[in-house]
Length: 119
Image (cartoon, rainbow, N blue to C red; front, side, top):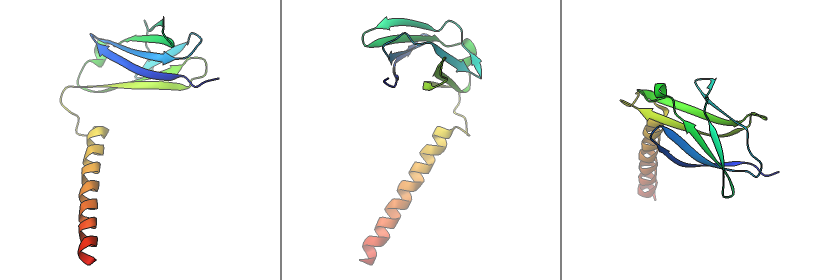
């Protein structure tokens, strides 16, 4: 059995779409804030299935909103997507990660400079 692969296609007009590479029709469970979303549609497509997820209006508000897509039968996570809206949250992990990367780059340059001066 091959592992299913979910590839994002687009997010437009409140509808997130992805392509799920599996042979048999999948039974997916999409969760937002721990609740299963209704109206998730699956349509046959070349080499798999097109997954269409209507995003609830409550998710189109300030903050970071995460959606988890899983196989309903096995609970195996197939993928996820995130919507970030409004003013950036100070505690946003992506912003923290960007700051950590910038600090690491600064430390690497300082370390390399100190090593080249010692040589």
